[in-house]
Image 1 (cartoon, rainbow, N blue to C red):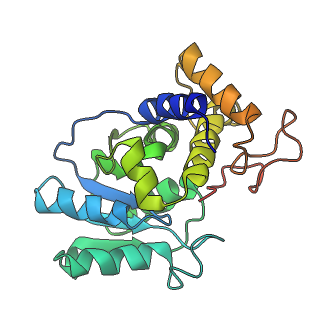
Image 2: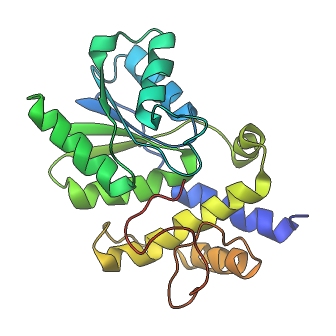
Length: 233
């Protein structure tokens, strides 16, 4: 059973992780690969609303997607977008990125190779990773405007879509931890984090929602990622 306190803390993290940007016209949409095909659906919606003329899907596979997406996350996203009516010529695939930093760096390199001039990016992620993706992009691509986007879902709706409440809370805690530790490691820009958000993160960690934490001196035996900017999906 997940306690009412844990759900309240998860809601605090959910609300903070979302940037609450208003989608607007941008040079390109970049869909960050993951287990969640909803990212591709959001990218399609933005394209069909004429907010982006081009979509880049980026992502290889991870331990949680290799069986579901054997051809790679970006390729499965591309297939989904084409099923929903996006023409092939409006999609670029970056198939090698294995973490958020590589998603940004390799997508940027691909666009430069294709001669696409970029002044703004609609950065499309899972709802609970908007802020993490934004902070990473601001560090690695500081000369473009970053507009965050994700599926407009409540925490309860997202939990229902995933079907594993504990996993969602674990992922929220993992995303929040990275906002705390990655700026010092040079992987993302630093952001002000309200004390109540940090306290909620600490309570959830103490309650055992730790499977997506990166190992640190505070959690030496916890985490399934490496010490770098590894995307734990």
